[in-house]
Image (tube, rainbow, N blue to C red; front, side, top):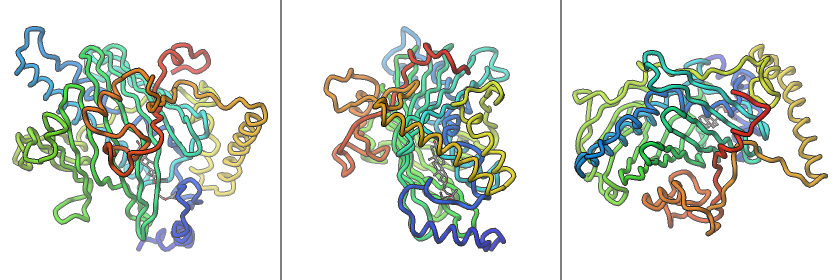
Length: 425
Ligand SMILES: CCC(=O)OC[C@H](C)CC[C@H]1O[C@H]2C[C@H]3[C@@H]4CC=C5C[C@@H](O)CC[C@]5(C)[C@H]4CC[C@]3(C)[C@H]2[C@@H]1C
């Protein structure tokens, strides 16, 4: 066992996990497990392969296409969307391990914290992709919820979504259910996709080298009917290596009831190589390579220098805390964090006194249980996939045990971004 794992701070931290109350940010983790990065920055992991995100826009059928050609192109597009989704997972769930040696505890964003930037036209794309922007905003602090919008104007592509988590502790791991979803819209194709988020757990706590492993399933529902079911497993499974997945693509959600109905199957590691085959049999390294996560380097977001940032922008707001974490100076960390937390407490008190609640900046909370709400991509896609519209764990089905309670979801308000005067990309 490494010296870190034996260190008193880690063992006392593990004990604190034992008395866990459900809110991860309430746990005081030892300094070496703290990340200098705020959770509001994690939205960028959706956009680090702009070429794959935009690719479906170029897979349009011709005007004179027959029904079969149209269908064949629709299948090509959901395969391309599945490839883009799989390409996001290494950044989402492995990037801290790769850059800092293990999963870390991100800074807990304050209400109203924003993170924004752009991906420039990828090298060698000859202007085909163009610029893609990211807007991310902490729309709730209790519980923590981050909303984001990624937009590529040149190709009419918009990805928007939000994420919140609920955690619980088992003897050796932290179990996390994700709430929220992503909606991907290709304006030129008049086509949209609903993407749900898989549950995960944190392994390696005992050995003080935590890492994320995905589990369960997630779904991609296309407005043209095609439906992808992605199942995740880790090395604990009989055959699986870590980060294993199997994606099955069906003509529609109904036919996904039987695995034999899969028209395409993709299998492998989302942090490594995966292979694609026709039908429902499991492809292997003898079949066609689908994606190699290790060989396609993520394109990093361009973020303004901290000196040019607004005080609500994440890296500016957290700069002193981030410095203290890099110095592993625990007293300074808690001193600088308290300054931010106390300022937030004051703000909330003033708002409570004057009665004007904090207003979110670029996102609106839409109540889908309100029958007057306009039919939109979310309602259409949850209908054809039979997925719940409620604030249930991501991917819950209608009439499942979680299909109850409120149905309020965060949506980007692009007019508010266009009217933005103070904060620039
Ligand atoms: C708080 C307890 C603690 O410090 O334990 C030490 C360990 C670092 C485990 C807890 C933290 O692990 C982090 C992993 C984070 C998730 C990673 C990726 C994503 C995907 C992204 O799209 C949305 C956010 C999400 C789900 C992160 C949520 C927060 C997680 C679970 C951090 C834990 C506090």
